[in-house]
Amino acid sequence: MDTDEKIALIVEDSIANYRRVFGMAMSSAVDLTPIERLMCAGFLVHSLQCSFPPVTIDFCLGRSLDDCINEARKLACRVVITPQVEVGPYRADFVVVGCNAAGNYCAVVVECDGHDYHEKTKKQAANDKKRDRFMVQNDLHLLRYTGSEIWRDPTKCAYEVIGFVGAKVREWEFMRAAREEEKRDRARNAANAGKPWRKEYE
Image (tube, rainbow, N blue to C red; front, side):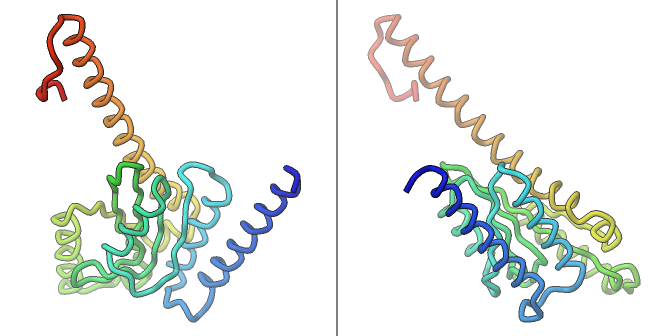
């Protein structure tokens, strides 16, 4: 197989995968609201247009937050997007997890607030605040979008979410590289001073 054939095969596989994912996103078998479907379409457009961070959209419903994190760790250096995720006693519209090669992850809960959100009672508002606090107390980032924002530009909303996760993953990579460089500097300085390598240099 030559290079052109290999490229054609990769493109063909990618198109088949996007058709499958898009079909699932738009299917009534997947329990998404119209606004969530729009957000999902925004994620799909991002994954087609951008190479970094690479995105995997996972339509295995009924997953827990731990399942999403484990999937992201398996696919290190990718962003995994999963709809309808169980997060403690709550169900998140989307969970977006980015993971670096060292296994550090950033998990973001994305809430898509449709028409009902704007007409909620005090009790519904209190429940939403309680839910938001639960997410933050469990080290999850929470990004909430109104139905109007998603309707106006679902791709922009998706870019913001994936950009946030990608920035966190890059930040960890930078910090890890800085720690490695600092460790090498300490070892080099110890060697130049004629001192033996000791555990405290690590």
